[in-house]
Picture 1: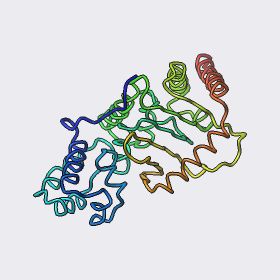
Picture 2: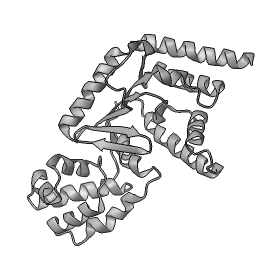
Picture 3: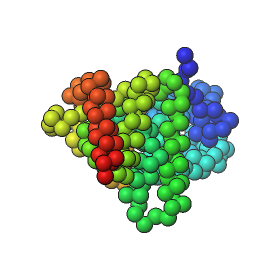
Picture 4: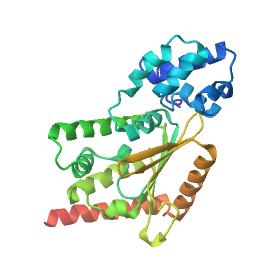
Length: 280
């Protein structure tokens, strides 16, 4: 069985900084908590920097150089971490996603990015940016499809997604695009690559009505929760806050249809889209 995905320090600036940070901290005889004090962060946050699940900020790099006598190493190399193809509010979450061993997501309105087809992604991005050039849309779609390459590993990360029924019913890109998008998710589920559940409209009010939720777990760092809104996103690492969001996810999953019933509903909706499109 393939092991957890690791970032190669030779090719990832974030992994390089994390490995160097751990080396210098241990050489200085400091615990993660000791090093976190001058940065005004927790020891668990230092562990996340070392594991590559959090992005080092410029002010943190400067304090690390001072605390570890690193002669500007972290400041010089931190700039490479700012180079991201993703929006600022999502860049850190996308980086964490790459090294997660388990991802659990509740999607209230749209198919999650990791499960989108090219046509569906294009329709979504065009809706987001109706006046953007085709080159801009092409780049956004390319980046989204590149993210989905983490699913090329047959087992890692474990991906468990709860889709609100609204995701199935909201036509994004037209009926043919929706039929293709739903069947793409069904194929992944039948290949045992993703666990899918549908939260039906009949479930009524629930704890996640306020928005989407993504939970990420790692082999050597604390779990993270990512909350996204309109043009915004927050990565949460406080253990109590993450545990609360894990409870929310568990309760939403408990309200959802079982996987077999969820796939049957998705198949039925996909058939409706395909057949109605053929009659038009």
